[in-house]
Image 1 (spheres, rainbow, N blue to C red):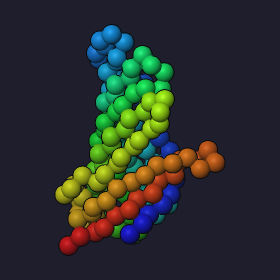
Image 2 (image 1 turned 60 degrees about the vertical axis):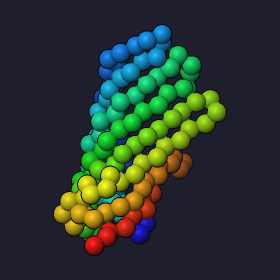
Image 3 (image 1 turned 90 degrees about the horizontal axis):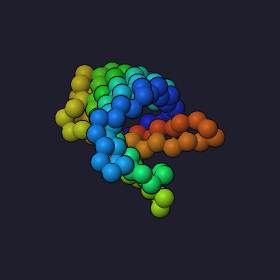
Length: 130
């Protein structure tokens, strides 16, 4: 199945906790609001590494999304892995296996994010197994 909609993110200031030769580790928390086929809230904890080279960084994060997906209520977790450099960017967001609850108990899939005309858009490709 396919779900699409918009999201808004509020971010806490990243808190640095380690630095070696300009490579800084930080932790931050975010809250998201999803609208569209998926309607609900996301709670995200992120660990990042920023290098001294402008635009070069990476992060991993876990996010719990709670709400309604095509009329089914529950929650699931997403694992984020992102890399950024002057050569490009990559972001992979996958549903954590067996993390679904309620009517989303057996969800599997992945999510993509993009910005269309200044609006953040999500696209969730998923299956609800047995």
